[in-house]
Amino acid sequence: MEKVRAIVTGASGMVGEGVLRECLENEKVEKVLVVGRRSCGIEHPKLTEIIHKDFFDLSPIEKDLKGWNACFFCLGVSSIGMSEDEYKRLTYDLTMNFAETLVKENSGMTFCYISGQGTDSTENGRLAWARVKGKTENDLMKLPFRAAYGFRIGFLKPEKGYKNTLGLYKYLGWLYPLVRGVTNKYASTLPEVGRAMIACATEGYEKPVLEVEDIIELSKRKKT
Image (cartoon, rainbow, N blue to C red; front, side, top):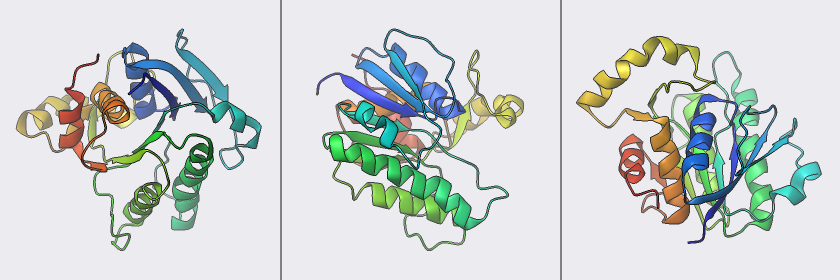
């Protein structure tokens, strides 16, 4: 397909920063629009940034969201200490509002959604966060995008020089080579996530839900 013109959300977070950096380095990506509540702190010739505080009201920026062919949705919150209703509002409702706005003007778009290992596609499991993530994946795939994918990331390798690495990863990063040395089922790098998203946008993938092994496999495709 044509060069990727990607919207990236969550670029001031760990996963979003990793995906954004890969987009800026990858020759398949022509330009990037970051939409966030605060600046990602990165400048690049490919990059345009919109600071927008209310993701439940996109009307002020709706015209800027037209003409893109990929969305890498990396915005998310932790469910820890949060009621299921509030977590659903900030996860399912917010994501679907953004996606429904995009699909009105970009029906040929590929939408890649950061989910997580253990997400519950049945929406009936014991864990509230997994049910909410599962419903989000399921309903995104019902929208008339060209394609929609759920990325069920696991443990992520912290990258040197990245600004938004979560504190837990700073202390547990030494575990990454041990986990990866045993299996590809549980751990990947941030560049691998970014490359896999770009590959979904350019080539597609046979599975709508990508587990860590799928992400690693897909990321190995050439950049050009």
